[in-house]
Length: 302
Ligand code: CP
Image (cartoon, rainbow, N blue to C red):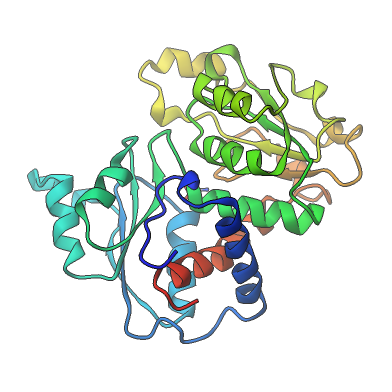
């Protein structure tokens, strides 16, 4: 993985993904080590973020690395009309690695083609979010003690939800079975169904969350992504499609965990938060250890 960009989860094979999980476990045991002394990491966020940006910053700070960058492209020379190509080529001169979030699908791939240093995709439009996927895999392993042969229910905005796209592709390495629960308009795109078809994996598409709650090991809730809708009226029609409540959880399997990449809006009622099945805040914590592993491995320290 040394010096290799992480743009799509498919850029790293199953063994490499498992190695990241192994190294993440080491960091969970010992997150404060001065392994990144002298390294400068650029953090370029062209789109809002709380968890991804701050967990990368926390991860890098705990390892003694330095971070430069911006949290709002409006404070950079993008505001003056600078192209993404020129921004990346410039920041390339100032850092050892670029972590980048961008609203356009494919922006991170483009950046990796113009940069001499590795790019970590921190989310590009509705496309991919591979570091979220790695922390999701870590969390699933932590809660289920395995990744193989699980039943996973994805609920919400499966069309625009980049975390769903990259996690589906990663879990396809582990013979999982999938239930995609969404309003028709927000169902999982065809390319991901074809991906599963090619691997001979089972999946179903449906609209009713109550049908999957008794079946699944992981219930992966997602937010309806208002910012990706071109027509606000379409958003209004689906914005309240799902709200998971404590009373809905009664038929769940004993091992079932509710995950969510966060932020949530109203798709999980706060009365679920105190239930043993609710695991989304621990999931967010795991982002620190997993991102420590990814950065250290790409910089060749681990
Ligand atoms: N999960 C996630 O990407 O959250 P943020 O948008 O807060 O980074």
